[in-house]
Image 1 (tube, rainbow, N blue to C red):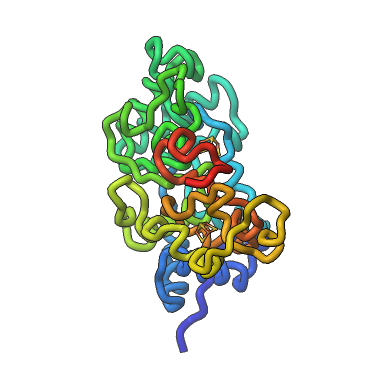
Image 2: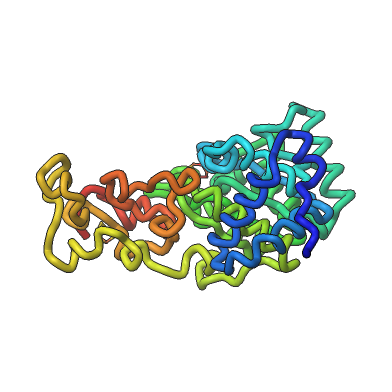
Length: 311
Ligand code: FSX
Ligand code: F3S
């Protein structure tokens, strides 16, 4: 009989049981579109030496970090943070000020070309980047330096991927995406915010296979963004039957009919929300009766609004 997979010691110390650990590995296999038989392989990969990760917070609302660290099961955050060596993350690190900036500089130097850079937020470029600075350095310079020395860069959130809300018309700070400013091709986990499971699965994919996942033409991992919301929506039957919610709270809303007439952008939006849902599969916007606003598409603030009008 095969030896049972051990929970990495560090996790056992935090009280994560083998059952919880394997549940997490099963969830990751599902998100990555792999058969359940991959769960033990994922468990093995999670015990490997941890990649160093540097997480930059630029022009954003920190919703992406919130999505990443606020998981329904307390052990999920422990497993996620244990799988990586998170050297720098302004929101959750203990260090602050000059001490924190030194950690960033030292990490970039010591792990040049080997660390993974995660970026949250867009980059204001107007007036030589005067509208976004940390420790006297512009976001432009920080991104060029830190992204430029990374093995790979993962953008989390539509702001880092495509400019997001900061770049919405009239874009007063001339905010741009990370790849536009640095010239580096990034993995884009889009969404405002993106689903934590997709962020984590991208890292798990790297640990499991030693490479980043295959991407679509907008830099998004295919495992998460290959299907339209509309194609997997449980309300699709009502769409085909011309059964629509006409206004919030009407009879159609009570019956769970299609939300296209109150603005659903699911027919134009690629994401796996209907498949994996949110908060460990609890629910998702359309499940709760709210139309999709298309937040994982480039320029969604301009292109998808008004959010509550059809089209
Ligand atoms: Fe942007 Fe992330 Fe939207 Fe906010 O920080 S993708 S504004 S949810 O959180 O970057
Ligand atoms: Fe499609 Fe949205 Fe209706 S995804 S089925 S238009 S609720």
